[in-house]
Length: 291
Image (tube, rainbow, N blue to C red):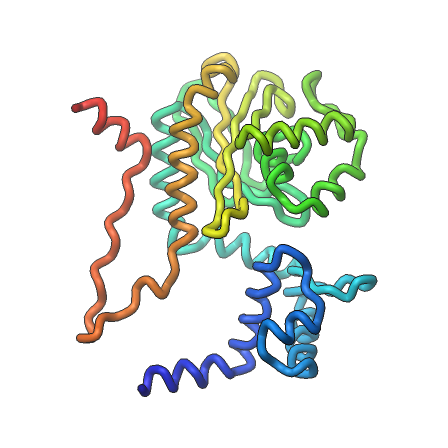
C-alpha cells in the first residue's frame, strides 16, 4: 500500500506530468493539439498549457505557429541522441554490432534521423585491411545513403515531403539519384522490399545495405547499416548476408524494447535474476557450424 501511495504522489508531481506530456508527444504519430494533450493526460487545459509552455521555452517541444500543434523540439532531439549513445544498452548493442562486423568484414552503423539529417548513434569499424573509414561526426546526406533512404522510406510522409522539396539533389557520384520523381519511386521500392542499398551513390567504390530497427509498435526508429568496399565485397555478395544483418537488427530492437519495469523486485524483496544476454549472429553461426 505504501508503495502504491508513493507512486501516486510522484505521478502527480509537475515533473512527472511534464515527462508524461513529453513522452505522449514523442509517441504520437500525428502532432497533437492542446485539447488532445489535455484529454490524453487527464489534466485541465490551463494546466496542460502551462506544462507545454514550459517545455516549449526550454526547447524540448515546439508548437507549429499555423496549426498550433505540438511536436518534439531540437533540444529534446539532442538529448535523445546522446541518451542512445550513452544508454545502459550501449554495451550489448556494441557486442551485437561487433559480431556482425567481424563475421562479414564490414563497418556497421546504427543511425537515426535528427532534424531531417542522418546522425550516427554507434558504429563499429571493420578490421579488414581494406575498409571504409568515416568519422562519426561526418554529415551524411539522406538522398544517397542506404540508411537515409531507408529511414525516409519508412518515416512519416511529412519528412519525406520536406526532403523532396530539396530536389534536385546534389550529385556525389554517377549513381546518385538527383530528381524528386525518381527518388520517390526508389523510396517506394525500398518500402516494399524492406531494406535499402547504396550502390556507390555516395562514395565511389563503397556500397552499403541498411535494414530497419523497429519498436514494439512496428515503427522504424533507427537503421542498421553495413558498409564495405566494392573491391572486397560487391553489392550482390553483400545482399547474401541480409539474413545476418536482419538478425542483428532484431537483437538490437529487443534491446530498445527493454523497460526498467522488467526489473521489479519480487514479493520477498529480492531482485530477479538478470536476463541472459542474447548471442550475436557471429556466435550463433559459429555454434551452428560446429554441429
